[in-house]
Amino acid sequence: MIADQARMRRDLRLVRPGDEAAIELKLLTGRRADLVEDRTRVVNRLRGTLLSMFPALEVTNTGSLKL
Image (cartoon, rainbow, N blue to C red; front, side):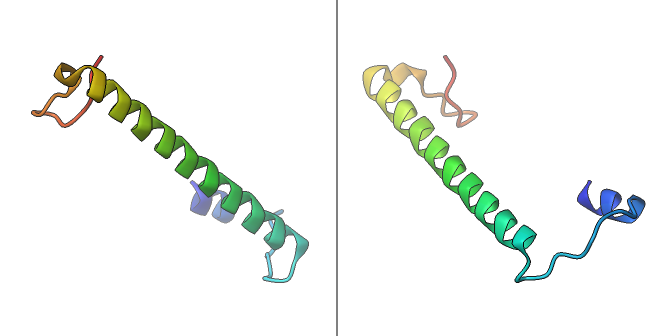
């Protein structure tokens, strides 16, 4: 999708490493990565807690947790 936009749009400009836009993008992507890690950690803790209380919830055939 990004490649299609870069190919079709002519109003995009180059982003250089020292540009303010590049610094903002780096900060935003870093923040997103932190949020994804936090969410994964919360889901895994919830899954572990549920499985400790209700071991029958674990489905070994598909490897997923089904409620």
